[in-house]
Image (cartoon, rainbow, N blue to C red):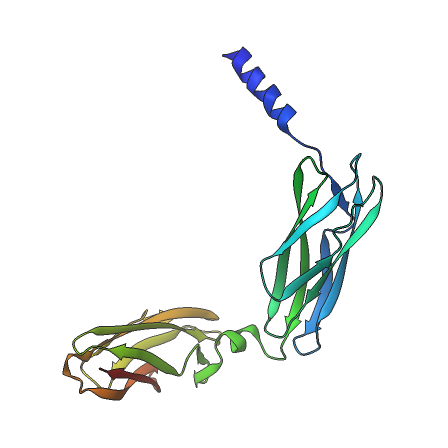
Length: 235
C-alpha cells in the first residue's frame, strides 16, 4: 500500500508543469472612480519565467465591463509583456473585483493565471439607493414600485417576488393588505435595521375579467401605509 501511494505521488509530481508567466502585480488597485468619469485602462505587466518562447492564447473575462487587449506574439525567456484591461464603470457601483483568466502556452502545454481589477465605483448615492431605488416610505425602500404580473390565463396563480430595505437604525414591523381578495403576500413580521426582506405576492386570477388589470398591494411599516401597483392582463 505504501509503495502504491508513493508511486502515485511520484507520477502526480512528474505530471505537474512549471509556471510560464509571473505578473508584477496580479491585482491592480484603481481606488475610487466615478461611474460617469469614463473608461479606465489598467495595465498588467508580466515576465516569461520559462525556458522557451511563450505566447498569450486568450484572456477570458467574466464581465463585458472589463475588456482585455493583448498581443499573441511569442515572448522569449526573460522577456516582458503586458495585458491592458479597459474597465467601463458606467453600470457598476460599490466595490468591484473583476477577475480575468490569462491562458498562456509554450507550444507544449498551457498554464492559467488570474489577474484582478479591484476598486470602488462611486455613483454619488449610497449602495442601498442603487439597489433599492424606490422610497416607499421614509426609511423603507424597494426594488420596484410596480409589479408586472405578466399575461395570464384566467384561473392561474400569478406570482412575483421583490425585496424591500430598512434604511433606519431600528427594526420596522411589517404587515400587508390589498384591494382584492385574490391577492396574498408573504413577508416577515419585521425587518432588521439596514437589512432587506423578501416579499412574495400571489394573485388568483380566477375572478378577473379578460383584458388588462391593475390592483394594489399595501405594505404597512410601523403602521404607516405604502402602496404598490400590480399590473397584468388576462387572455
